[in-house]
Image 1 (cartoon, helix red, strand yellow):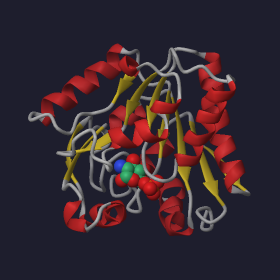
Image 2 (cartoon, rainbow, N blue to C red):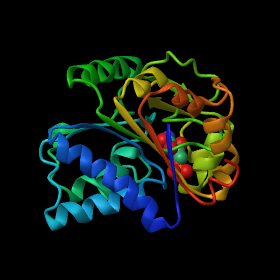
Image 3 (cartoon, protein in one colour):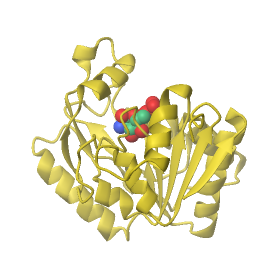
Image 4 (cartoon, helix red, strand yellow):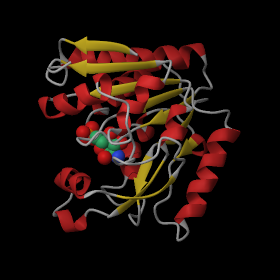
Length: 241
Ligand code: GLP
């Protein structure tokens, strides 16, 4: 596990963007796994800038998003589908048919998850997975206690996650109680992973995940077992490392 502690937000975003840029440069038809949340927004901004300048061509990449809320329509402002188009896909030259995002509106979520898993395999697997981390250590929406061999599935969100994510909704009651998420095994099958962590509120969970024991109680701790993980932190989130 390679750990990089950034001195500034510019350096943080630049380090992450450089890894993604190199991946696409080395393999123009790369399969990327993408995360939502506030943490990767700076990375996505930089990728948009690289695309506009003509420094990066997204026309052959494929993407698979980590997760999606159950029951939100794709045009709901808090759906991850909406987030990805708003912050990245509508601003780069990716092809719509190469974008894969779990559909939270499908009546049969289990089938949707099984098909997603098959689609990832059929694409040749994820070359580079971008991850954030929840305050309880979740990756994707894999909450504490999720077995390490889990695959893409319908997940019950914990009260802590619902509360943390309620900042994006008008009230906690509007936050969906379930989500579809890539499993921990699905994430671990990615060939390379970058984990992005910012802010003092994540300092304790960052130390637990990166330095603590490897346990399903802290889902992100599984990443210690992956051979090619780069963790990028700011100074605040690295305070207890
Ligand atoms: C959500 C997403 C995660 C993300 C996490 C952290 O729960 N499902 O994939 O990593 O939030 O979000 P933020 O970056 O806003 O702290």
